[in-house]
Image 1 (spheres, helix red, strand yellow):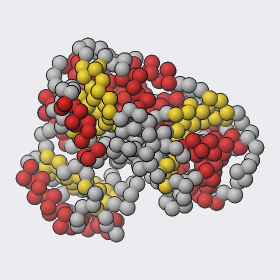
Image 2 (cartoon, helix red, strand yellow):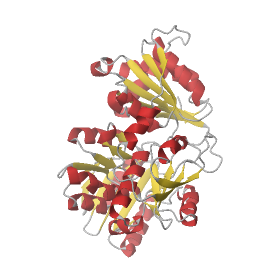
Image 3 (cartoon, one colour):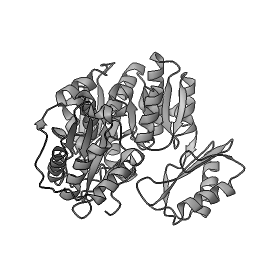
Length: 451
């Protein structure tokens, strides 16, 4: 099936890889991923979709598959992925499925899956099993439904939930927001209640993404928000991805802020009321993130990349907050799920409380020099990781995710991508010169970067 069953979701091009036949089978066999505790809540599954044109027929086929298996459906319609997570927990459903291809181009579509209380389904916890079932399936798509379908609007409950987490309402600030024609567009009525002068960019739903790709990890997709912040003298800028589960931020000077710095900035807010709590961050994050958590009296917990790993560790440790370099931020108060909009709210809380500009608040976390994430096409990924272990055997090595090697003045991680045929490098050093020197050294081994 063209490798559509990924580490964290199902995703591919429409209609050759992902189509109505696949959607029906995904729905039909989703039941097989649910455990007794999930099923005790129904079985009932929340289904929603993004703004892509083909998300409508895919959602309809998915719901037919669920109902043919005896799983009731709550259709919440057009929604961002965090709303699907919220609805799954709020409605006490057995699980949730969002029809989306996240930040991928318009020709892609897919499914993000979760169990009760938005517990994620990853390759290790069900997607591999689902791939086997769907691949071998001979289920008749004309089967009659055995369970009900109900349409429900949960946006008002979602709005009230998010607004309940606004802690500081004054002074009025100016916020630029780039929805990239994606599901962040639906945030407009909530953003307008945050006591901000809003500068909205591309707040028209359009699954063809006519203005720029809905992937704020790429610098070229931040040009518009950076310009808007500077031209309009904003206090803060935010760029959402296609399904609005991720966000990247820009300070008042129009400078993009790496997401690990946002994790380090916000962690102390949670530790004020929960001293000694665990704050989970992914292993690509700066040493400064770990240090900020320690300085605030928290326990920094380093985890491998991926929302399923982050969320599982947060649940196990009862962690109130966690963050990833890719712009995912997780909140116990939100079913331990990602929420880009809640991160906007937390940053506004912090700016108002401190009365300081964002650049000044972030400055102490810019104490090291990082390459950011660099991609490489490598035929033998496992062999390359072993080779790096031999080359840098004098460092402190762990294999939590790929290989991480740490020295007194610098460190690097090289890991295989969970979604693409790539190795990804992140390197950080105490000085810009050392970072450049070690980056050049590693490029001699890894080869030329790819975009």
